[in-house]
Image 1: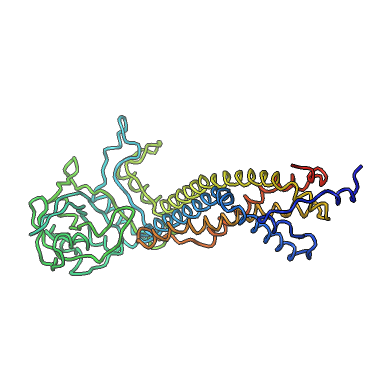
Image 2: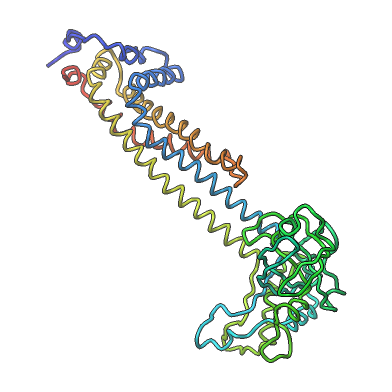
Length: 443
C-alpha cells in the first residue's frame, strides 16, 4: 500500500511556463474571499494561457447572450411603440364598423350597413361620451395646381376633431355649417399639404377630387406615425359632401346614407364595457336582429381590448424570440462542459500534485467550477456589449426607441452565469474525485 511518503518521492515534472500560475498553492492562502479571489485569478490565468481555445469555447455564450439582449431590447421597444400609439389614439374609444364577422354565403345579415340614422340614434341615447363621430372613408386622387397624390379621403362631422384630439396648424376645421350645406371644403393632413403645395400656403387654395373642386380651409398639425396609418397623409371633408357629391353613398333602399364606421370617445375608460353593451343592443334593435343567437351585422371594437391583446402578443413574441436565442446559450454551455472535461484530462497530473501537497477535493471542485463560471461570464459580458450595438444603432437612426434596461442586462448576465455553473459542475466533480496516486501516474 502506497503511503504519503511514497507520494512525495514521485518525481515532479517541471511546469510549463503557461502553467506556472496554475501551480500556485491556493490552498495555503487564506480562506473565504481571499481564497476565492485567488481561484478567480488563477482561472483568468488559465484562460489567457489558451486564448484561442477560450474564445472558441465562449463563442456559443457570446452569440446566445448577444441575441437575447438585442431581441429583448427590440421586442420591448416595438411593444412600447405600439402601446404608445394606441394610447395616443385613446384607450377610451369604441369603434363600430359595418359588416358581420361571419361574412359569407348563407349569412343573411352580412349585407346590412351602418347609416347616418344609426349615428343619430346613438347620439340620442345621451351616453357619457365626449363625442359620436360617424365617418365614411374612400381613396381618391387629389389634384392641386402643380402636384397630385393618392390619399385617403375621410368624410367626417365636426365632432371628429374632439374625438380624435386633432389640432390645427393653419385655418379651421370642418364646421356644422359646412356639414349642413354639404360644402366643398377640405382639411389636409400636414404631410399631404406639403406634398401638394410644398412650403407654400395651402389654406385658400383649391384641389380637385373626382372632378369636384374643393377649397382648402385648414391644415392639421403633425400627428406623427401610427401603426394604423398616419393622420398626416389624410384629407377630411364634410361627411355630407362625401356621401352626396363624391362617393354616392346612398343606402340600397335609397332612404338614407351609409357610413363606414362610428367612433365613440368615452368620458371614463371604465365605462367602455357598459357603452359597448348598450350600443350593441341599440343597433340590434334598429337592424331587427332576432334574439335567437343571430350574429351582429356590425363590429364593435374596444380600443382597450385591442391594447391588451397587442401587449400580450408582443410580449409573447419577445419571449419566444428570446427563448430561441437562448438555445445558443444551451449549446454554448455544452461547449464549455466539453472543454472543461478536456481540461481535466490535460491537467490530471496537476490535480494529483495539488492533492499530494494537501489540497482537498473541495479546493479542486471550486477551482474548476470557478473556471467554468469565468468562461461563461466573460462570454456573457462580450455578448452583452455586442448585443447592445443593434439596439443602439436602431435608436440612433430613429427607427425605434429600443433602450437596454437593467432587467435585460440582469437576465443576460444571470443566464450566462447559470450556464457556466450548471455545465461546469460535472467536470469539476470528475476532477475532485480523482485519486492523487492515479493522477500522478497519469501520462
